[in-house]
Amino acid sequence: MSLTPEQVRQVAHLARLKLDEDEMERMRLQLSSILDHIEMLQAIDVTDVPITAQVTDLTNVTRIDAVTSSLPVDAALANAPDRQGDYFRVKAVFEE
Image (cartoon, rainbow, N blue to C red; front, side):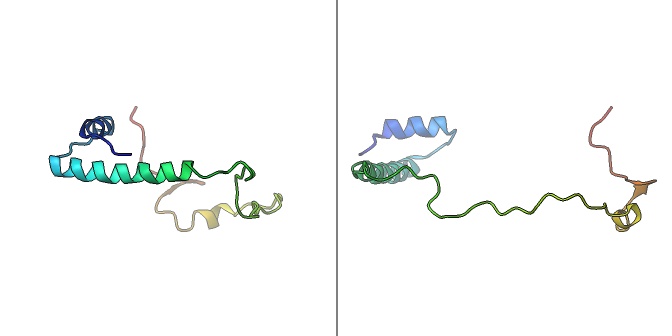
């Protein structure tokens, strides 16, 4: 499928790209090539191919959610650059 320069200009406009004429022609050729490949893929008969969301037998690997004791406050704050009591002290993110 060969795109027209006007179609490429429209795509560039939608993507908010400023392309000079050389870039426009290069994009026209590249996008046309991509669309040609898509047309080839669409021509393949996949009626007997089952719908697939995952091609491998991977499953999520998770650990058992077990309640454990927390890290002691002094250990958690040992490398803190600044602390205030039992809390990390950080610069304000929001202005009042």
